[in-house]
Image 1 (cartoon, rainbow, N blue to C red):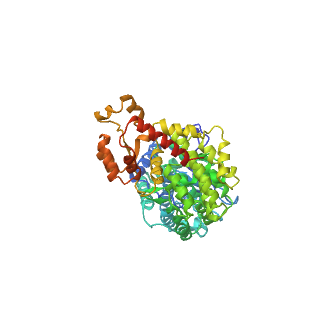
Image 2: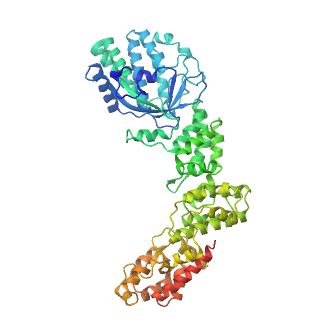
Length: 580
């Protein structure tokens, strides 16, 4: 590419002729979004080309195209998976096709065949299912085939391009759509240029497009970096998630198979796996891969997950095998994140996992918990050992949360915990391995009790769980609804309260656990900042929570002394409940 026709000094900036010529195939992932360029984008491209033809400018820069070179047989063309650039590459190929047809229809068969063989097809036999240079997504394949077929209908051209050696992609998608519409628009553009200046004008147009329009071609080792690179160049990019990349990687193994075969794998293997992640308006699909990756390699960084999985799958040719590997931990992950028991684990183990979910256990615990759940399910971990391990973990996490320790550092604890336990965890082993991390605090009984007694816990993520567990420990009714937290001594008390509490005591005591009880939202709203004598009867008679009813029976008045007494009682109960 001539220096005057380059915008940058980047050696990877190439004109369109250099990008599209040679032994290369551009493959759009089968399930990628379809081609969508709107008419106004074509109009702008036309203007950019004509500004070069009419010497208003010397060149035009189309930005970066981000590709990922797929490994292939050395004798075959280089196959580039298009991470970003689908719209531009497809459009330019349509314009080349339109130039070929225009030239051929006006008798320039040799020139038309040259463009066809250089930019639209690989003019030899290959092991690929098609030697057309553009392999679109499933929605666009039938339309792409129709464009090539349209050219081969031109008298004389078919023989010059050796049409018998051209293998179309197995068709899929609709016969009509944006791709075919834009091909016809390109034909109209070239026809208008012919009418203005004949063949010389047509030649000037396609030469300007191929030789004076450039892109920076970026071939990434790891496709996860494609969106990161493009985001720095163009904020309009819709990011490609790790889930998109995993799907594309899996289906790259059958990208050249017949669409019916690909669709069968999609419908019967991929879609059941994918849809299981969706429920209640949430999709856990993308969040699955980091904990799954850590199961395979505890030292992975989040940014390295896709590359690691791709390397692991390098020698696996069957998509169903990969999907089966992923699915092994899928139910465990979903149950842990959602607090379910789709795996049908035993009651005590399932209850322990649900309690961890209810307590807000951080996502750093997921790799260990997923392996533990699968171990129980396949019989490699005993139920008693699993239950003990889960009790230890819950105590560790609750003590830290109540004491105000951030989850910082927990990733280092849990990412290797399964390996550190040699895949045979029980309560004692888990406790021992966690305590090896000297920089991660495990609060003592005294520290834990002091936090329960004196630390303001209203607003803490763990407080709702503490109150629910205390209510559960009292037996009797277990409301399914998540309770609202009632301040017995209100946040904004009526003046009667200050006959019992000083303003300083109110400030220090109102958010302590001892001053909090579970109520329904409706009851919490109705009581507001009333005096205790007005609240007590409602607690006792009407609350669905036994903790609130018992509170009213136990405390005939609510004073700094009774609040302190309850704080000591709760501290002792918490230390016993989470006794590790």
